[in-house]
Image (cartoon, rainbow, N blue to C red; front, side, top):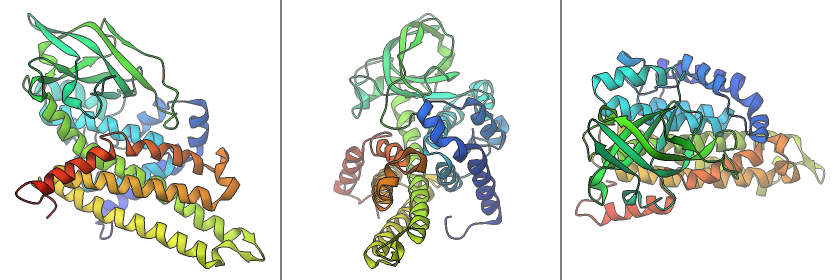
Length: 384
């Protein structure tokens, strides 16, 4: 998908690149410094199909493939890694509702989300339940034809700006089998938010607690069967991991491109920096890491698109490898820029800060290693 693109994919990449260069890149540093969440720009992203990339077309989705999505997120991240990552999370929620929702649910929520006139938040993590997601304590108690939700969700992107909150809540026994996915619309009584977190990166998207205090929603807001929420959440994360990997890849590629240009212009000791073999080798290593990342990401996107039996492990492997490699490349780009890389106006230090969290969210890279390791220890090796 990255190396033998169809005519449609070439046109798609050109469209997204043009959007990223015009709508994102000129404002990325300013949005980062002012912690501005550009909802108007997100609505324009929705106009070109970026709000429901792999949602079905009958409810306003673009109906594209996971490979197409990887191409899209790489290009978006070259414009702004923070906003690209939020669009990834938004698309994860849209896919979950579109895939596991009823016809009525799909028609009710997906069109507005796909257009990005409405935004979505994915609410799984809690203050005391991060990597151990099956240990969530937020409850949804049945009361007639309603659920009553109580609990707190932590580190929720878009919180306070979203129209739809897809909340994983406990409706049954302890463990993964007692969790249900429930839509909580904005404005529901009892729904409130914590302060916007002060973060190392991702400053242009809000990150808050989502607080649920006796929040009542109809039982028809449950996505999928009661008790199926954990499985739905994990299936959503398979795609989320690939998208955040693609965002990392795009941010790192942007940083590498800037490094090549800088070393071609900058002189020291009477020579261009790029003519110093040690620095040239450093650039070569960065390029090799990103090319390897693209190959693994393409393999994982194909596995997800076609329902491969090794999909969970290969998505975990791609997420870990690509986000680790991309952060290393971005950090090397900062070093190659010297003191200028440390200045905000050059944008390199922003990418480094943004990419660091990609090694943590959508499952930490330590958990990704655990998933791959467990798959390898099973009777049939999962990465064959």
